[in-house]
Amino acid sequence: MPQNVMVAVLGEGEYLPRLIRAILEQEVIPARNMFLSSKNKAACAAAEGYGVTICEDEAAAVLKAEIVLVCASRREMGTELANISQITIKRVLVSVCDDARVNVDYVRERVVYGTEVIAAALEKDGDGKLSASYEIGPNVRLFLHQPCRDLVNAMC
Image 1 (tube, rainbow, N blue to C red):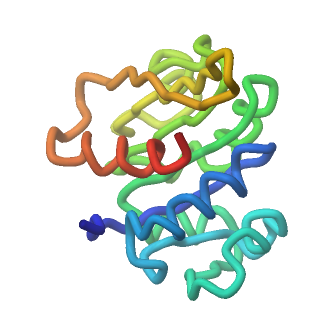
Image 2 (image 1 turned 180 degrees about the vertical axis):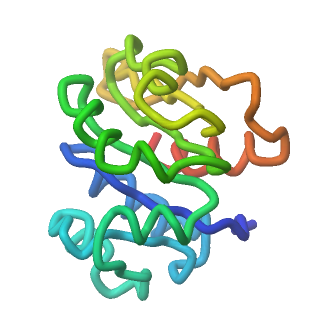
């Protein structure tokens, strides 16, 4: 069953287009509930033809969303978070990274107080199959745990 939440998807790297396509193909949320930045060409290309909402930049996408998925390598995560760090208050920010060191504390140090944080650490098994493990911050509203997991698990 599709989740009825508003989701901004930001970031860079190999997992970003894969995550966007997986969410849209599996209809985890209605396409109109996904917000992307027009400045992120890879994200827009991955969502082409699905009817997602394209915003002028990352900030506009975040302001329209309840859940913000930020997909990046550990090296680039700080840069991606810096672009939106002051406008994430009262939103759930889900970091999606293949490095477990990008945890809740790492993200909370880089965003404004009042941001609810979930860290999704991606891992590949011996066959190359992707899985995610989650660290959930103490202030994340309980009813948003499962939608956040469903969004990331679409790719796994």
